[in-house]
Length: 173
Image (tube, rainbow, N blue to C red; front, side, top):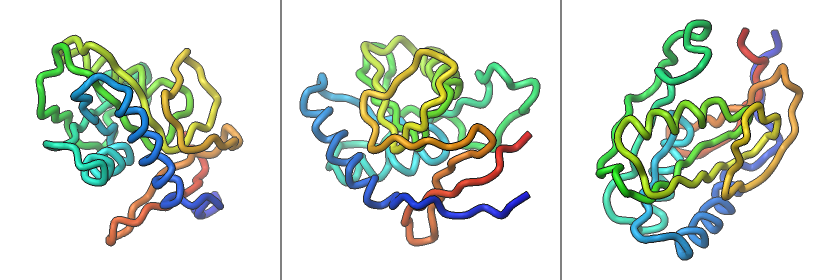
């Protein structure tokens, strides 16, 4: 097993691109649109977007663990619990995630979101779209698209100062 190593992508520069694209999207979206970060990298991004865009309130946090279709094989992932500081019923929601790959996490997140009510609309913003979809899910906003072999995972990491970087690791069995 090879050690994890940073991908030659500048996560901070991509965050700046995501910030601009989400800002533009929100200008054309129904108001208010609520940001909800998918654990864990999506939460970091949603909280930072919330602050940098000057949006009121707190970004929501959503977990996918209990709704994954491979829960029996994977078990419960260590992640934050869902916390939505707004009424989901009739809300306009922008889900935020770090990496979009197969779409299975997003399917689980949408199921979790609907456990809290029926939103008026749901959109998706991601830092990286790596293709490889198994489900018909796409991002409304992606800062970039990359290609990686199927046996590698791409993860967002954050240091103690809050700076972001990407890490490639061999996919866990």
